[in-house]
Image (tube, rainbow, N blue to C red; front, side, top):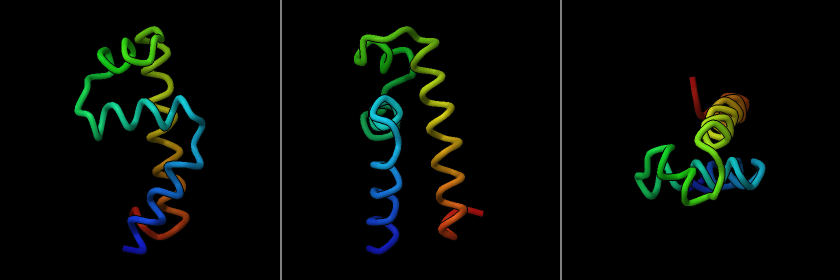
Length: 68
């Protein structure tokens, strides 16, 4: 439960677009292309938000001892 709460807290600390694309890709099982349409942004923009979000999430998870 602690890990889940911490994960959600870290996710909510990301910028809104980064949160949105991660949610669409990981929880709604959309491709980045489909997520970009749902977000009304270009595929390149969605891909950039996705890549930045993954890197930031990994960094924050490592800092909290939840990711190797």
